[in-house]
Image (cartoon, rainbow, N blue to C red):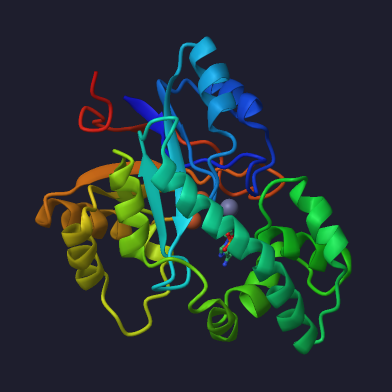
Length: 271
Ligand code: AMP
Ligand code: ZN
Ligand code: FE
Ligand code: FE
């Protein structure tokens, strides 16, 4: 099927509402579309309602932030609307984000970046607060010239990683919550995981033992070499392949338009 299995709405740090995303997905010619907001199930009912009205196959999704490494994100798919284990995990991560915004503000202050939290909250428009909202306000106040600079200099550096450590569930707990809900699990954007001296293959082997089903091999920012490496890894460990854009809207992430990836989704969509 022609699909994009990695997108974000206003329920986390995306620009468009789930309904607007459904219309964009339809216009992009997709057959299957998954909404995968960060640590949030909040946009899914609207996504399913609006997407199915347009004839799209809508797959419920979520992108959970795991503690093991910075940017280790676990994608959950095709779980039922009522998934208490997943709801608990998402709520825990949302509570974590409520505390995290103060830690991020204090961290930035230590670095000489003083921005009002109210503006960051306003950027999130009621959705969950993430680093891109901080980056936007840092840009507005002239601390950085681009959002990317905010990440490169402040929000994606080892010192930032240190303030995150121990605040999120482990990858294993994320996978178990998705599996307990009856969902399927893919490892998001492998290139982005800050592995330090550790090796991706060891991580994949460990996560496979916890129930990992797939690897997100197709991703906007993967180079052809990375894509080939991840496809080989998926093959070696008998894992399925997923793919998506990580679309957040042109304003939030101009370099990641909606993707149209050809995927075998029989394993994900049964019945
Ligand atoms: P958070 O959920 O607060 O950890 O933020 C995750 C968001 O930050 C995702 O949308 C990522 O695409 C974005 N992000 C992570 N690292 C970078 C980076 N180096 N440059 C730009 N955006 C990034
Ligand atoms: Zn995001
Ligand atoms: Fe991610
Ligand atoms: Fe994402």
